[in-house]
Length: 474
Image (cartoon, rainbow, N blue to C red; front, side):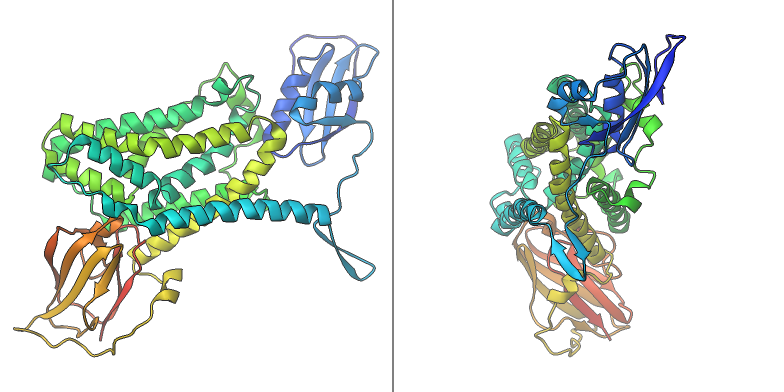
């Protein structure tokens, strides 16, 4: 319960019903604003019961109609009687299934918005904009800005953009009682500042360290991405109001939410900055390209500028996500709709990311449904005692030139003709066959596969987004 320190000899308590609450932070917002009312000494709001217990001094109890007028802009109503709510989406009555037509229309509207956003994302993916951008150690700095622009419209958006979307709900709850948009924008600016500063400093360190640093630990980055995506998935379920997800500790308890919303406390306020800087380690394919060039620059300044320009290129897309979150969270009643749309989009992005990393780890995934073998499983004939798998890497796919079946116990190598692979495709991965990532150079690349053991392996990119090719060792 929240309360004032002033002592009043005669205090009374009344309970009112509240309509319009949608999340835990609505409790905090209503309590804080009620405590500013004359005579109100304490207020305890219950989202579950949709009630508020008000402790007040004086003879006159708070007027629910007056409170409704004062809270109208926030979308809350007060009453001494329970509010009548719409019937559920589907219900049974007298043996018949009844559907709420009003809620059906709202559901179709939300579904149309979500589907439109996902179609737009997939269309950008199919455009394969990365084929128009090629960078190396001799590229001018503006080229890395363009690379960042392309990254912001590609699979990187599913990872970093999805993470940002899932965090907006937490920030909205923390700043739900902010009076101005500038206040509510604080965590957004901290996130973006952390990303720009983090990329600059860490890029400089890459340039300074050079070959002493390795960024090609495929298993580590795959597991990291899966963990981040699972967190995104849980936060998305919380956005959608799934009860069991809201009980998880990822959702701050009410007392902590009050503490974070208190202007006198700054604990946790810098977390968005740290998260923004930490996105440097999330393995988007385009990010890996920029990081690899920064590694070979041999200079702190050059490495820092390369990664700064790349981060600036991704900034417009991420800024657009922040702007949309701020606009749609101006009022609590809009927040519920934003949470519904954003939650569904984040679930898609989280599953999209997890599916890709399952490919990197060589585990079963939804991509396996698309994998069909058009070549007989006849093992390769060794040439000078070595089995040679031939592939062409072009656009956003790896194209086998012949069988992809090997014989166990016989040395093998993979020969890849890179004719312009793009995005994460420039970093090839095959868990169990290739150690970590292999950065493809233009032209012919020869990759030693050692002596393969019996099993089934997946050849894909560092993010698992390139359609995996199955390599069978018999």
